[in-house]
Every structure is written in C-alpha cells, then in structure tokens.
Image (cartoon, rainbow, N blue to C red; front, side, top):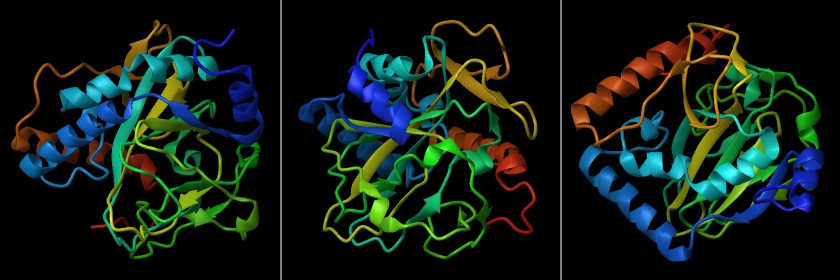
Length: 273
C-alpha cells in the first residue's frame, strides 16, 4: 500500500509522468515558509536558481525532509532516497522570462532515469502566473534537444525539444500555496511568462533512489534523507546547523556552479556569463 499517495496517484504518475495536486503544507505553513524565503532574500539577495539552498539555509533543509513529501516520493521510487538538488524558481510579477519545452534528464547526466522532481508552490501557481505545464506520457522516451541561449529563457542553455510540441496536449499544473506536483525527470514540461501582479514562487527538489549515479564529470554530491545508501555513488552532504553568511553562500554557489558546468554544458560551444 502507498504511504501517502493513492493508488490512482501512483498509476497516474506511471502513465502520465506527472501527478498533482498533492497537499503538503497548510496555507499558513506555506505563508510562513514564503516569509522566511523573502527574509533571506532581503539579507542575501536574489535566491532564484541558487543551487542547493538546503546546504546553507536551515528552513530549506526542513522542507526537503518534510514527511509528507518524503512519503509521497517513497511511493514512487522506494525507501532509500537522496536529494540531489533543490532550487527556488521565482518569476516576478509581469516577468517576461519563460521555460521552453524540455526534458530535465537531457542535461543532468543521471542514470537510470528514476528521478522524481517535486514542485512545491509557495504562492499561487496558475496559467496567468506562468505555472508549469507538461505533456502527459512524454516521459517514456528521450527526445533530441537543441540549445538556443534565448535571452528570456530561464534554462541555463535555453535548451528545448527540437521537434514541434503539440501544445494542445499540454496540461497546466495549477497549484495553491502548500500543494505540490511530482514529475518524472524525462517528462516534457515548460512554462510561460508571469502575466500576473504577484510573484510566482516554487521550491523545486530532485529526489533519486540511491541506485542512480552520475555518468559525466567529476563525482557529484547528494544528501541522504531517508533509508540507507549502499551504493555510495555520490559524496555525502551534511545538514546545516545555522544559516551561512553571505560570503560563504556566495563561495559555495561558485564552487557548485564550477563543478556542475562540466556536465550541464557538456558539448556546448559557450556557457552563459
């Protein structure tokens, strides 16, 4: 029996590559986590796409370990769970930036493709605010991509599925604050600009079963959040006891960015400034 998801949720994830909405936080809890994020932004600056904030900020360490999230992830990938990455993805009000249609595992270099991404809403995620959209069933095969480095594309390389995506088949992942979606690392997804008057804030977490490994670049790191790791494919990461200073956070982000560029930009002629 699933721990948190229903059988219908599990079956839908298997067939569509995505399932939502799943309740995690109460509206008051979601508002409190948003308050803590925006307090840290006021102190440290923009945290949009800052890598692995759970290694530097204690409240994000709380979120990646939330029992409801872990129970739902366990229902998909089993009891031995690593967090490989996490990021806040923020679109400001009337932000022109977008995310092109893509499959994450095209450039993550993780095998086998048993990667579950959590997208936890800390503000309303709607079509008007540029919610994530996905193409059901697109996780069953890897598609060819091309790099565009488009100016308003949030993705690091502006990568997009090379073939035309039939957007009539896409589904909007509409979430209230405190709800999450789960999507497979190979499902085709993207999002439009935020046309609303409010920020769109999501916390994105990548969970791996411990048998998954990095196949390109230097040995990467990950954090065990449930079960045991008998494979040791990743260097072990450790929980923060206090929030880092701005200087140490900046140094950490630089180190992660330098290491990850070896596989995120593999085979690319140029990287962003």
